[in-house]
Length: 175
Image 1 (cartoon, rainbow, N blue to C red):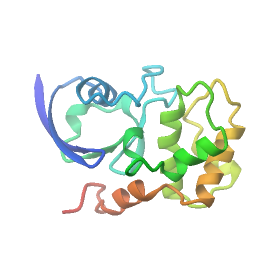
Image 2: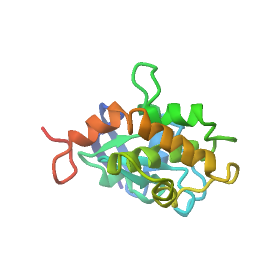
Image 3: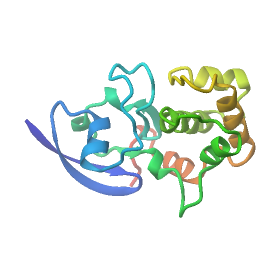
Image 4: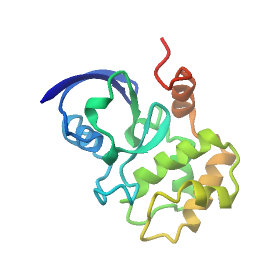
């Protein structure tokens, strides 16, 4: 069975026709061409598919696209503003928070969500906040330093902060 779903993706309103069983990660990659959201494990263990759904980090391999009516989704492609990297993206660049890059989009989205919840997390809080995202390359120290850099240089960034601020108490876009 197919469903028309009206939602906002990276600030743009769209209507998509999706299968009942289609996962958000595949909707983003296959229907919208937003391939920054990676498919890592298909079991929700790795976090490579993390996006912001109504301002909260979720693993998009666990969300049915048909359930997204009226929702707002933010992917890694939607963090920068007019070519200007978000503080989290810039932190990963400045502090070398990536190596192969496969986990990076999910890490960026989880770190953005963490900074929306806690503007000044300790290294322990960062490790705890990112524990659902796996990286096989870095050993995490540079990722922690990247998130600390972001916390000290603008936090989650204007797009994510404004989007979460535009949500009503139920987590949907306020009119």
